[in-house]
Amino acid sequence: MKWPIIFALLTGLFWGTYGPALGIARAAEGNNPFKPYLMIGVAYLIWAVIGGFGGIRYTGVDAKFTADGITWGFIAGSLGAFGALTLTLAMFSFQGMKPRADIVMPIVFGTAVTVSALTSVVMIYARDHKLPANPWLYLGIVGMAVCIIVVAKNTPHVAPHAPKPAGDAHAGVTTPPPATT
Image (cartoon, rainbow, N blue to C red):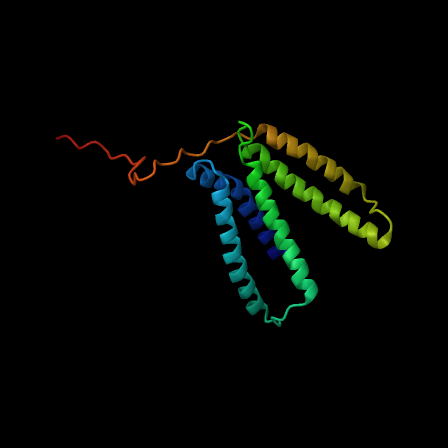
């Protein structure tokens, strides 16, 4: 069970740093979140193709696809892309409101955990016509909601650096004063 835990932690690391990196990209593009969103799409395409082909070759499985695999893979990819779009929109300034990654990111990740758990509950109910009875699951969902609020309320907000003026390759670079003898 060691490798799945390591990769899950790495996913949390990557996705946890995604919001701050998106904020830096947004600031570099004059606070327009849609330019970084386009680059997110390019990155997803490149890394998904490389990772997918690499994984298929590594596992040695047949590279033929099934109709269900294609359909559900496309649905999953679309859900991920829509998630990236709605995150971009959450980080967009609406009617003068300043986007706050310190509030948005805990809501995003706490909600994702909760929705994943509830989706499993609904799927089990659809199959077995009874709800899973473990009260720890429901206590955990309530606890996650509390944690979202606590983390979002207490996370410090770090503003990204101001973008460099266009055409000034040396903007923000300082040189030390000449040495005196």
